[in-house]
Image (cartoon, protein in one colour):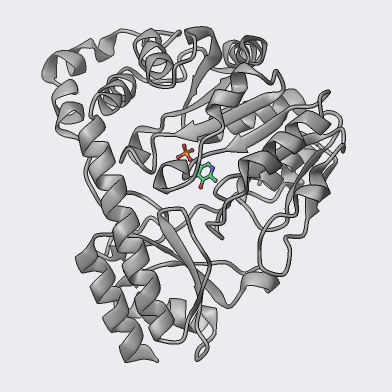
Length: 349
Ligand SMILES: *Cc1c(COP(=O)(O)O)cnc(C)c1O
């Protein structure tokens, strides 16, 4: 760190992404990417003509993509914002709405407290219940920015829509962000509720269910005034936030409905099969509705299992936090990859 950095920034604890090894080939089950490639439509959309067009700036309004998302989710284009990954949408939302403080669970997406620190937000991390579920009561009438991932990460657990509605209705003067990064793997989206509630911002991404993590495209759907706020921040930081290739890739991904449905169904099927296999080996596994499992062995601690699996070429995610240190978050890969995972676990335990 240089001696020139502002002292506040120098103190911030950075977000640490899951490993992205560039040397050795691992079975990579650590960052919730899709094991399936982007659709044929996406591959075709990135043609040499599009590459030649890289000399031009991208469309600052990302119109092609915004229009696709608006059709797909049956909202107006004015209700859609696109960001450089949903991380950017969350970043802007924390910047815009965190002034009066923020609330989110103690165990959730690790970027929320980082944004909280970055914007000097007075935030509170509310402990999940013993079973890792969120107690909706903790978020009723709090008059703060509320951020909930649904399904939550890394637990995979979902919240009932009626509980989300109660939280939204009881905090009318604050924004409620529902982060739906994993919603396509078996949960119910609250996007339709954005028509009714002006304080609801639903954030989602092309990184997981649409196989485009490397393209960095996420989006937010909300009342048009919220979308205006997000555009205001975008236009004061990075007006060309979506690059040309990624915009066309994401738009083409929306046009691949049957491919998308097939992949999500396969991942759900593989998830349930892997869950059963882990339970048979003595693991406790949460009721995940995401593209990962959250599991704890009755025979070996989390860190040792993580390390042994890595030595055997299988990469999963282990978190240091005391409460979940014996758990691993395991991304659902192909059926073959999950069979290898189970084999390696058997060898280890
Ligand atoms: C992966 C993830 C994101 C970030 O996704 P990007 O769109 O790739 O930035 C946001 N929220 C949650 C809960 C995630 O797991």
